[in-house]
Length: 316
Ligand SMILES: Cc1cc2nc3c(=O)[nH]c(=O)nc-3n(C[C@H](O)[C@H](O)[C@H](O)COP(=O)(O)OP(=O)(O)OC[C@H]3O[C@@H](n4cnc5c(N)ncnc54)[C@H](O)[C@@H]3O)c2cc1C
Image (cartoon, rainbow, N blue to C red; front, side):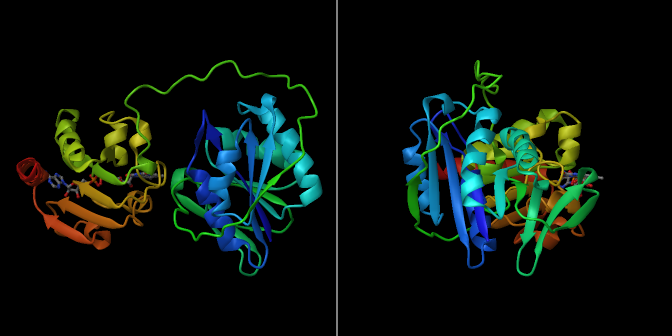
């Protein structure tokens, strides 16, 4: 298969999800190719980075493409795809991607599946996605080519280097868009992307109250990590929604996942089970979280965490 991935970037920073798309492309391409498309102004440096993980990187540059504009992206992508004939197009399941993918799919007369978490291309193309906030997992068979898929962030983090070529596509926008970029509104200061954090201290209902969150924050700071939570913690307003781990939150794969007072319901576990090292603290020895944890401490978080904090402080 020829699998094309649309790279995402903003203000000179490449979204690492772009590499996850390529990891998936390399996994499913078979005897075909993984190809990235990077669209913008002065995006040559991204092309070099992407080429490590792609057989080919297509660069589409123009001053009018400096900021993401779905109309222009669809315009230039169609020009490329009309010539290069992708079998599948992968786009990040992000605010941008979830706008771009259906627009592109309609223009290509292609099927689209959003927020995909698994793809199997060994025989025919099959993809999986959650439905009804994670109550159901749907497996879909895609019968027509090309197709457009948006891919959930954090699922395809591992991949191999490919070292491909960079090709400058001689493509320019063919129209003046009806909408234009006005300004980017920065997210509130303090927001963190838990999907990118190498160390996560996650709290569950066992943390009991918003007033106890600083305990986890102190531990996270000492470890150089960030605080995340299970759904009840978010529903209670103790942490913002973007800190939720699980099927209706984010999928994370940090180097260390410290689960404090989290029972280990499958909706939570599905979002963190692939973490490199999972350590759980729970006072219930039967808590299911111990089934996925590499190390477990049966104990009270209000005793274990302060002790850990003291030990880390003493260590300097
Ligand atoms: C459609 C759907 C989608 C969902 N999506 C998500 C999701 O994305 N993410 C998610 O997390 N959940 C999700 N859920 C909810 C999920 O089913 C569980 O209810 C939730 O994960 C439980 O959170 P918890 O482990 O924090 O709380 P609980 O299950 O109440 O567990 C609290 C744990 O803390 C332990 N504990 C209590 N006090 C202490 C203490 N002092 N010291 C040590 N341990 C202590 C208890 O022994 C217990 O194991 C979803 C549910 C549905 C139906």
